[in-house]
Length: 569
Image (cartoon, rainbow, N blue to C red; front, side, top):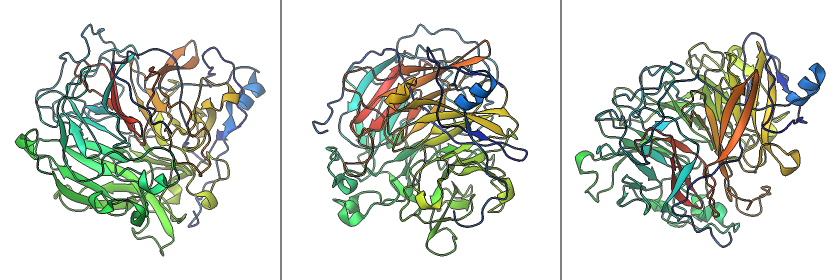
């Protein structure tokens, strides 16, 4: 067992938990943090007002808090950390932001391929690789060879309106310079002190939405972009855009609803190719699925064909009756990219909670068998390509105490499996509750046993960082040391007034939590991404990757406070 401790803290968590089950492992948890400095070029103008079905056959896993475990064994430290791959050697870059780097010729932003996670040495640029990096698809090919970074970022305003809650990174016009998209727009790179020079509208939808926090914004202030992905869906060499909306909005209450992408849907928009930077035509839309529930989504190659699957939840997909929902993933037809994607249920059926506002989803290889597992707030499902429900492949891990059918909407953020402490097995990272407090990682201390380490919480807990509404999370090696870090922050006005979100208008911070290991201990060191006086927090999804081509990791954020890029230095 590895003992872990906080940076300059010796903390004892009050929520004890250890997970155990028959022969394999699984968990769900959280993340967040603070520290460092970034150069700001332009700042945002913040608004002035601002499972009823079958139960799993395995017994519930017990989750013990690090404070108790440590007190029983010794009496001191509590926990913190994150990891993923052995350290890589890489030369320090002396190139300024936006300068040329080792980009694969012709890279268009598509994914897939045998890019082995954990291989020694700096990862090389790969033809056809993605400019976006995500912990849910660690083997994805990447277009830019990574170089070390300082975890200091230059902030650049793209647009200070509330246009979207997600953004993506890709070279849409194939000029060798990465671009970004958010909502109904894409912007050409490079991004300098004046932001983006060329803006393009590629689909119908909304423009700036209200963000005062008024109760009516439960309908009028909800974006039609909660997850977007840059992916060459039809494999024609040009990167397309996948867009997923929020799950269930009463569209009779939404202004100009007919112009927006309908809630609870996924659509991909076809890049027009060589005309993309000059045409004013809308990109052709291809519906992927009309029943996409859940508030977090992510990509991975589940079946090994090089094409992405997307996790989510479905109410109408073969569930018994109209009052149940399963969690699973959506698959493309490899022979016809324009046809509707197929939903594959992974979990048992759960009672329908009255809406698709479900939290806590992820992909990861928790048992290290080389296959993608499905992570959710009630446990982890392995062997997910098999027929469902296969309760023998379910680890019943209750990370939210006794949360079950009566509170089905509650849960955390995006979920990831990664070797946090470097001991060779996989741990899990996620938020405790997306609309409250807490981010934690769950350490596998022995086969089938896990210990919770909370590192972001309430001010009274005196952890590394304190902020509420940790609605989105990402895992990636942000400084090039070969160890995966955590990217998280606060979603400002995640709900409008009247829904009891704690600290609704608190400082909208965002962080990289750097994992440091030394002498058998792990330290989670928080580095603020946005150090300006007008911070922008996070939206419903965080994009990390290469917005320029210098090899240092960058961040793209679309939130209620605007669209911004943060160039790593």
